[in-house]
Length: 555
Image (cartoon, rainbow, N blue to C red):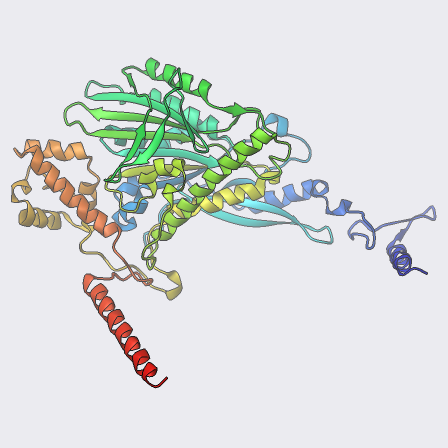
């Protein structure tokens, strides 16, 4: 007999021995064991185990205890939390899980991503945290169902019952006030296609327009809107579209946008009309996951200029195109595939910037390169990723997630890249170091007395009771908007030139502190340590060169 036939007969005999006898004389396969030697994979189908997965997930979430949110806004409190370091205190990372849509509801659909535990402030400086719980359904080779739980920490987590109003009030409303005070505010949504990014960002923009503080006689407002498709940049508010929009970097590090129209707005209805025009101009196409999928990155820029001081603040509202897996784009046309490739390439650059920015916040990483120049999208977002940025940039990142179990791998990937961006600077916990060495040259850590001492020694004319005396510590003074410095100096009888000198001197020290090198245990590498290291390195090189020269004499 052929060996292959012998193997088949042997497998059939084994299956027959495992069959369970029935009353009518026939036999059936056991339900708990996948038959060997057959192609029957029904027992390994996820759809047949939906009820078991739902019960397991319900059991896993039953122990979650609701905790009320703190009264103080997390976005506001991070600015004055000097222990975090200014470069991380300007990041607020949130997650939002959309509800299951009507056309997705069937007997095989269930939620595997939901709100986890809220953890209040803990001893030792651990900040308030809201968790996202991901329950990944798994099947063993014997058809036994189980779930793998993993939680991700965020500043805010908005579940399927949350509204755009709640997202705006908690995460985005402070950015409007900061833009009016001459600072930079950035809010962007990141996630897979069909996760609700455009719905959320449109809702946020609608509420920005309705903000009562936005339109006043002291501020001039201008609005621009552009979209990025690969390397192509389009002005969505320009009717002709003949002018090419270019994004570049000046010699002093500022980001410049050429060819982008800017429209003056004086009332909410004017801004609403411009926003509606921009929405209608954006590139959208029907895909397998979304009937109106955004095929470009839409960026709204609202500039707020103070009429007295000329200081300009900016608010960026960025609606990113959704990332797509190979399964999502299997039926795409050639044109859609090219768009998907360009979208995923720019989002990959964004991921690299997020990863590098997180690594740069950890001690021991001397010079981590953040590749924000790799794409036009990340170049425009330079202030978010530049460690030495001389301006306060408050960033809110919204990680948009689908609750469906079918999308759980994509959801987990989104959360994995977003969650680390909120971490505070901390030493290597593997070496059991309790806390980092305090940087005495960091103005953020100064008390009010130390601030006054620095002013008296450096700028005696600014060390008056009308300027910075009182209860303001270093972190609170550094958080003051630039125009507030001008106002306080004018009240004290000082000049604008003096206010600018003090402001630049303070921010020079802040930038130096942000880029100061630390060892992996959290200790600071001083200038003397660097000089000693250089001298030792040079001496070692000379000794090695002398040894090689001596060796060559005997060759």
